[in-house]
Picture 1 (tube, rainbow, N blue to C red):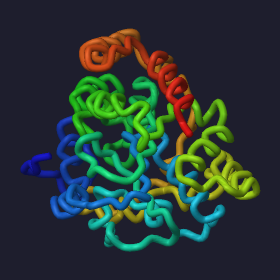
Picture 2 (picture 1 turned 180 degrees about the vertical axis):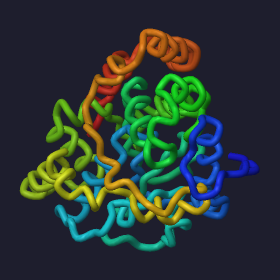
Picture 3 (picture 1 turned 90 degrees about the vertical axis):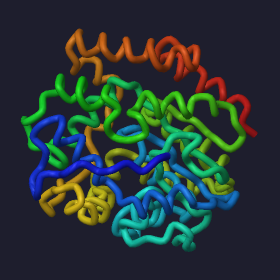
Length: 312
């Protein structure tokens, strides 16, 4: 990954145009922090929560941390105990240091092939329409002024333009899907967490070699429910990261209360116009289908479920 020059960022205000929002993304992390991530050398037991934005990252961090600690909730922020690899240095964290519990765990949005090799990867993917709508609302009020950028403009000039890192969601997705069935990678779709959270937690526990205590599993399942996480939303608001990077992104030093939204599935397409849905379908046909042979989102879910049959 080449480090690129960063464009100028308006001072101390949220973006109001798609162009300003793209400039804001350029300050998401420092070159020093990114270099530390790309040169990181994992140990075999390290666990990477490998997602794109709004694909169940925080949900999976909570599951992983609960499994390795027996359900400990004594942390100020989930991103301190399960740090974002690419942003750890910017948050004052040493990615090479021991963590509060073993195995070490990290969040990452890097493409497969860019993420340093080694360790175990928990990949979570999501319907692109749901990612788009969730991402729009996630950034509204944090990176851009509420009401200043329409969903239509965001879709065309930000989401489909590859902004947000790693060549956009479609580029990230096609980098990871070939790893289905690899022994060091376990896939879930976001929908799977909704449909069968206990089954997902049990599968992740086996993958992490943390599946020896049914009592712990029960605690982790309860604490990974949306109701529980909303009750403890201050521990999942990513405040440490947001405050650390506010100045570099040209933002006011204030943080929205939570990154947790509705957590629903399948609402994205209904929120989009026919024209925007057609654009997403076109991008899938241009990027995902030729690289993977998968013609629609339902095909992704099907092969993920089939891959579970090869697990030990």
